Length: 207
Image 1: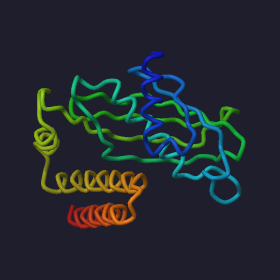
Image 2: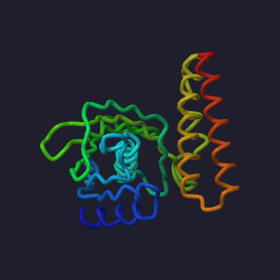
Image 3: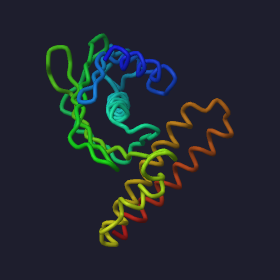
Image 4: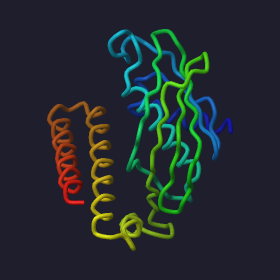
């Protein structure tokens, strides 16, 4: 488990979630945990932690949990995330996030993250779905994995699922934009995210 923690913290330092100052404290195939101290620069009004910071923390943990269960050569991406906020945390408080699996499938995994304050009060519960992207040497190409998700579904269900994928793609574009130092390329990525969102809205209206 120590090797997993070191590997995930190294990945964390190279990605957008590093701005939170979070640290992986536990990492196994059935449980991933992290902690962070709430700072002013990740807060909203009232010096309470911003909801986006909580969601980013949970998103990274869900991806980590999936990563620790992937077959060789496979990858993952978030395709859906739902957050229920039940409390808040102030500057100086330490919050702990614990992520555990709800479902581990061949094409998707579902993980639930519970975020709590030091006094044990839950401030958020995040449930997210991760798509498993098989590598070229794996049992299926990414395109085949995606196609398999739609098999046996009605047209309305297919549109609803495709809308989820579009929104997931938009989120990835925005994460890439946040890490892009070139202003022109950053705007291109943000425009791509907007197009994904527009596609998702259109599909949802038709579903």
